[in-house]
Image (cartoon, rainbow, N blue to C red; front, side, top):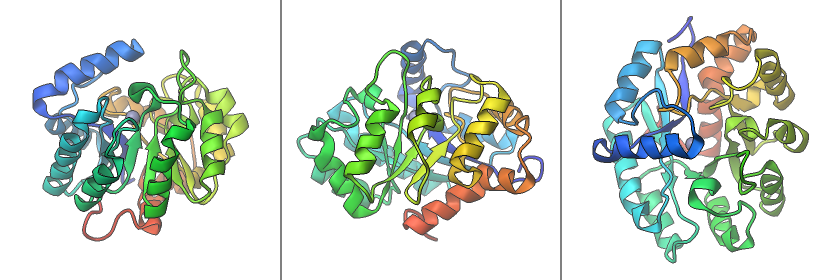
Length: 276
Ligand SMILES: [Zn+2]
């Protein structure tokens, strides 16, 4: 709890202890940004708890096809071991066994799918990826979609708009307030509805508080989730930045935890068995 609110990090990346340091360094190099932490589960739980974070939505996108199953097994083991963690699994659009991979993911009680077009090197709206969206849409599972990059347009908000039009029942959390370094475009293009939500991860440090606040209010505070993008940012600092937005009590309560748990509950992604 922080300032009397339950807090969930709706966007946390974790790695096995063996590769955490290496994986975190490569994300740091990819974005040319320093990382606060190292990507280990123990470190996330410890620092999160210290800052008042009660729950974590954990994920880890596979950058190669061969990693998909082992990453999903790891994510499932973390969700099983720690009741404060709920996990989204990974799929890779280049896999030739996406259906079996998805079957494997679902059997492990993972609650959604994290996709990262820039790391996984696919254009979000490439028709070659449609069968994968079709499969996820049919399952009702939500997708946590990485959004936006200043140097590539693979995850541009326009592409998400195309996907949402093609798949009218696909549930998506658009990360980084709809587009990291594409905030302006995201605001112009994306509108929350029953199946589209936004997370605040890796955004609060880049824009003035009044701009973040106005984006959140435009999307609808009830459609936004607080995310930190562990291991990128300090839990304490991100919470300070969040409270500096000066949102109302109800908006804080919703964004920090309730909007996410309610939405995942409605979508059936979490149940008593696998909730935070
Ligand atoms: Zn992410």
